[in-house]
Amino acid sequence: MATAGSTAPEYNVTGIDYSDRRHFRYSGPLIDIHAHVFQTRPGDPKDGPPLGQGPGATLDQAALMLETAEDFGVVRVYSMCPADDIEPLRERFGDRLGFNGPISKKLDEPDDVAYRLLDRYLELGVEIIKFWAAPRGRDRGLLVDTPWRIECARRARAAGLRRIMVHVADPDVWFKRQYADVAKYGTKLDQYRGLERLLTEFSDVTWIAAHMGGDPEHPDHLEALLERYPNLNFDTSATKWQVREVSAHRECIRDVVLRHPDRFLFGSDLVTRHTLVREHYASRYWCERTLWESAWEGRSPIADPDYEPEPNGPTTPPLLGLALPQEVLEKVYYANARRLCPPTLNVERSNVERSQK
Ligand SMILES: [Zn+2]
Image (cartoon, rainbow, N blue to C red; front, side, top):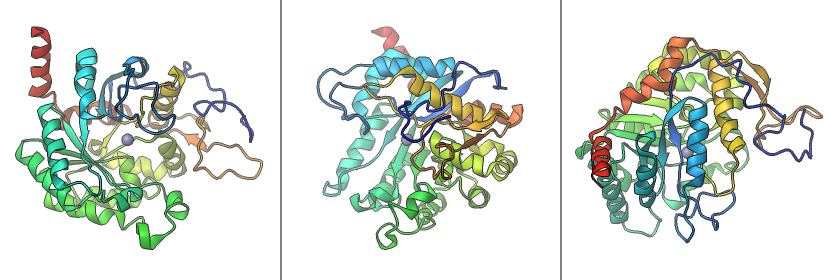
């Protein structure tokens, strides 16, 4: 068991053997709807997202991550990445990757910067666009329903792209700590006003709210949203957060998923970084699968800075598997993503172009 001050790596503080998967109960394919597969470079920040520029770009980490994903049955990964990374990634990995274009701009840039970015992603054949609108993005103007994003949603819809992923909220504990200034960040519930406005105005668009809609702490809130908005879906990504809170609300979350099995999509939120090792990628897939499909009970193997341990207690939260039934796993792991993101002409066209080179 890990103790305070342990030097064990963040991806395995309890010494789990990630090749031990005897508790897994699902043998079909999975689709990871939420990941960040980039080119990486030696000069990238250690913890932040890759810079997307500079010399020495390599796809080695992307290859390592996709190899690890495949080892866990993941046959297709949707990547949010800079537009410049899409062609090299597609060239190397083909249909194993789908793409999601994050639409943002700096506060002082004209709206046209966002529209040009959208155009570029549309030309590159992304299947989803993303509005990242976490509370910490507010002072940078990254609200989910800011006018230039609404215009991007309109333009995407007019171009035939009707899938938008959003990130609107963060863990409850963040609202107690880093977002304690309510005047600046708003309450957690305030984060949902803009999303609900978009869900209403764009009722013909498929919405995927990332990280269990940002609210695994409140299964009743998630269910109310699902019932109010038939165009809304949730992904299961952000492993540490979901392990901690889904385990803590195991029965209630399980009931919501069972009542709405068509509305949840498997995701990891893995990010390729220049110096990561295979076990880092394995830890997230192992934990996500253990959480949803198995009856495993133990301590999470991943270090979690948002967990408040008991005095002298284990440093990582409990991981309590939901043991979802097979027919539900088939939907959450694969069929829902396939239905919402069917193989597109764009992918087929890019295959044809590749074969003609
Ligand atoms: Zn993400």
